[in-house]
Length: 121
Picture 1 (cartoon, rainbow, N blue to C red):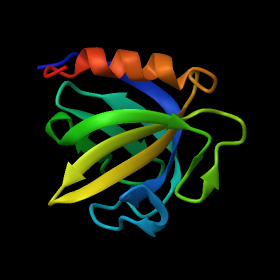
Picture 2 (cartoon, one colour):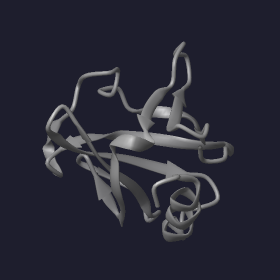
Picture 3 (cartoon, rainbow, N blue to C red):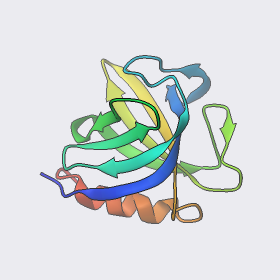
Picture 4 (cartoon, rainbow, N blue to C red):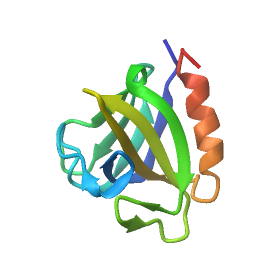
């Protein structure tokens, strides 16, 4: 089991299918973008959007990698680095984008912290 990552303010930008900005993943309550809190609980990366009951969860076992970019799902990061979590679900290759407070200019640092929390890495 990995460790936890404290709740940090952030923004969920969306989830793409096959890293194509025009192909949005709509299952598991992942269509709506929004602000909320980014965290990690030892089994999954979580994002709890404001005004929702349950967080978006990306289990560690589905994660295949990470990337950094300036755009995601048709949205510009406003100059901030976008964390892109690459994962697979039901044979689909997905990429979920997040902006995380404190990591706007160093998403690579956030990736290193997250990789250290994932047991298989």
